Amino acid sequence: MAAPGGAGPIGPYPEGVDSDEDREDYDKLRRRVLWTLPYGLYVVGSRHGERRNGMTLNWATQVSFDPKLVGIGVEKPAFTHELITEGGVFSLCTIAREDRAVVRKFTKPVEVDLEARTLNGFEFRDGTSGAPILAMAVAWLDCEVRQAVDCGGHTFFIGEVVDAGFHAEEDTEVLRMEDTRMNYGG
Image (tube, rainbow, N blue to C red; front, side, top):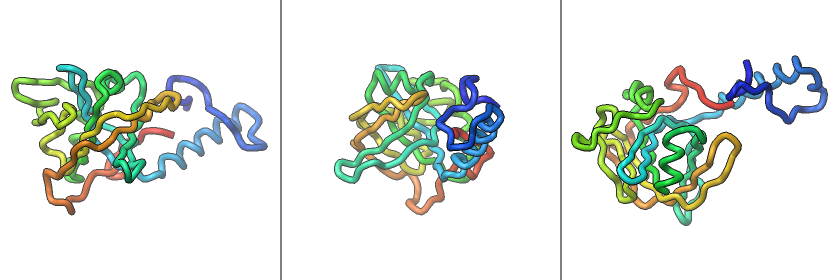
């Protein structure tokens, strides 16, 4: 299986991995190992002007305590990437484990109904930053972009948390990648 985008295996390779077949086998192994890293599954909200989107995302982490900074990895061709780049804001919504089917609804650009205040039929409100926040989220972080780091096929957007909250009980179990049959990365 080729790497994303149709390219062949991607180096660097350890000593002794010299042939095309060895490189392909090593690339498959490396991807399987990377897929074992634990990830959450989120819906990231983005906005520029009146354009909004929600997108399933699994590359998210806190990167600083002071100030409170959160980083998310977004693939460059994604509509969400365009909106975050232009709008400078994003929200990160955690989803309840029992709502795992919801993340599949956000794998493509969403249908936005501003009058009904819905993204793909799910109610939202605009956060302090203006980014959409799902009403059904267990918890949410509202962020303003402070830095964008080029990471090959993705951009790592670092956002400062300007608001946060819970819509459910704090101990509600949230969705993780391993709760689904989805995988991304590697």
